[in-house]
Length: 283
DNA sequence: AGCGGGACCTGTGGGC
DNA sequence: TGCCCACAGGTCCCGC
Image 1 (tube, rainbow, N blue to C red):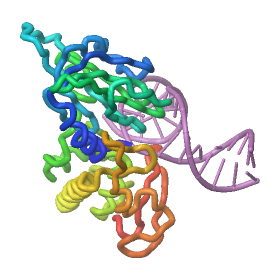
Image 2 (image 1 turned 90 degrees about the vertical axis):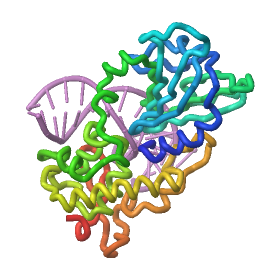
Image 3 (image 1 turned 30 degrees about the horizontal axis):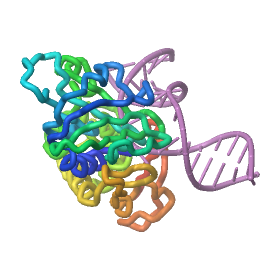
């Protein structure tokens, strides 16, 4: 599921109900849900959530010690959750029933000392939880070398990053080049910019880089305003579906009519991912 | 260096 | 109904 707009939607729906809460425990139900670099989740206990942030597709709970303990480098400072394909975050009253796909339950007390829980559900179990201090983050490639946030992206910078022979779409999916774009929004942005997904990334002109940068920002902004896209599994932290799937121009529309020219949209595989585009409109 | 393909998992939908 | 295959919002790792 979750690309930048979906993670941002989760962040926005979750943040108001968890700020100022502190963890009282965590119940990991599937070991593989814990990232190999993670500190043990028992170290969460007593830590307070100061902010809920997002970086690319990562959800970041910014943590601090509640009591006046000496600040140490090794103290966990972030709880990072990566939803990957089918991860979901949901809040619940304390002692809510576990779902079939619940991988971790976090127990918390809010600022009024009222208990509640955060569920991490994940059908395919690709998602990861990482309790990290600064040192762990410095050893995590995805974090350390993640490309710029799309909303801060400048066309000149994007063009510089889109070097070489690999396809434009593969480049957009590479989190080291630009953060947060996945299969849906890569196809949508390339269609909006009129660019052929198979073209070598290094072949785009200044004007095309400008168009692509604008298209990425516009599509992602619209998707966030629509609460993200719900294809199969995605829900925000309130359990609500997004609506942007109703606005797809190409994703999932192979064989149907191009919304610009009316021709038939192509569906091909590119780097193992389904890719839909218009032969006429994307050069 | 850069690619393609497979691995990691579970579920769903289509074809027979 | 049921079986089998293809496919699904993402990364990582391996071998060519």
